[in-house]
Amino acid sequence: MKILVVGGGGREHTLAWKLASDSCKPEIFCAPGNAGTLDICTNLDISAEDVEALLKWAVENKPDLTVVGPEVPLCAGLTDCFNEAGLAVFGPNKAAALLEGSKLFAKDVMQAGGVPTAASESFTDADKARAYVAQHDFPVVIKADGLAAGKGVYICADKKDAEDAINDVLVDREFGDAGSELLVEECLVGEEVSILALIDGENILMLSSSQDHKRAFNGDKGPNTGGMGAYSPAPIMTDDLWPVVRDEVFQRTLDELKKRGITYKGVMYAGLMVTKDGIKVLEFNCRFGDPETQVVIPRIKGDLVPVLQACVDGGLRDDMIEWSDEACACVVMAAGGYPGAYGKGDVIAGLQEQAVKDNILVFHAGTVMKDNDVVTNGGRVLGLTALGKDLQSALGKVYQALTHVEFDQAQYRTDIGKKAL
Ligand code: AMP
Ligand code: GLY
Image (cartoon, rainbow, N blue to C red; front, top):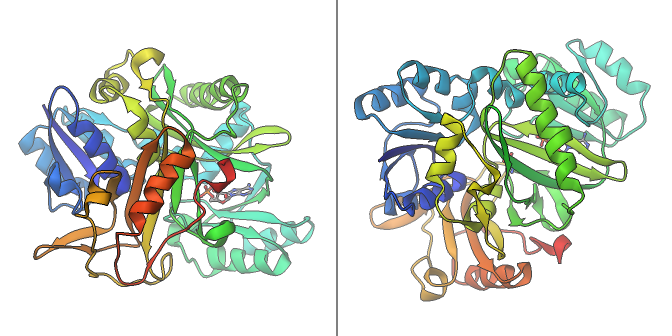
């Protein structure tokens, strides 16, 4: 069996690692992959966003399954093109991926379907948006409509912040067409949790809970990033919340999409806030979370290939995944300066140390091989990940291993998982 994994981050290394261990022993290709995926796959020199080149490769090489990591190719219609060519893809089609591709569309679906979420108004006109926020209490949240690589959300503490955000999005067009509209949203208070659900068009299989750490620095300070670490399970997701998330979040969203003639297949990521008034949806993504994938996937016992295939072919069942009782933690090592400007090409030392190789999983993100060295090649560089009998033990292994891995100006948070301990 041949599997193509599209993407080159920590999420894709984790997926490729899990798929490679499958009992059907698949041959894995990763486009473009990274220095970590090289050990288990054939890396293809094709960008994850180049749908045309991916399709050309797939038509020639006929993978039995293509698993798409990032949102950009999904929103660009990779699944539609591949399906037209008779190729199976794990990931929603373009119409369904709009749940991530347009925050206005997602909000409209949630409002129409009765999915609990923050109250909001949308604007295309900067003056109208300014007039609206002027009458509001702060904080408010302002969001660019389209894909903005995680940068399109502003938590505005006061009127000045809100006006700056409106200017960025609607006037200066910082996000191009992705910012031709914006949402002004009620700011929710509570603790965040990420719940991912596999969906075959009809059936919903919720994956175990996880919590990301989006801010760059300890204590949830500093700028928003793609995610600086994660752990699973997340104790904030108590037993009573699971049926609520299934029925009020995933089922209602699927039902509303279906009413609009849209079938959702793949993974649906719900970013949730556990508020004093219950669960509310912050955002939907049409793909696995990063770094949530690094802590959820290693806790799956048994094969993943049949589960992903069931998402494509139908017949997904709750008993298709058995969960390990172990906890999993991932700490992201990022390049100095990230999420702002950062250097590339720094040699990473320590990956071959016994204390690293034997005790933890190292999922690569922004890495590449240069001569015989693994060098940095992105903002988030590595996800050091460990399973343990509990979260404390998993975190202990990761932070111990972190003393051995080094590159110039590496930065990481030292408080991952603290909230759950
Ligand atoms: P998003 O890209 O929508 O996930 O937003 C990024 C981050 O902004 C989320 O993980 C939250 O921490 C925060 N956020 C988004 N929407 C809200 C909201 N309505 N209230 C409070 N925080 C929010
Ligand atoms: N970890 C957040 C995301 O994947 O969007």
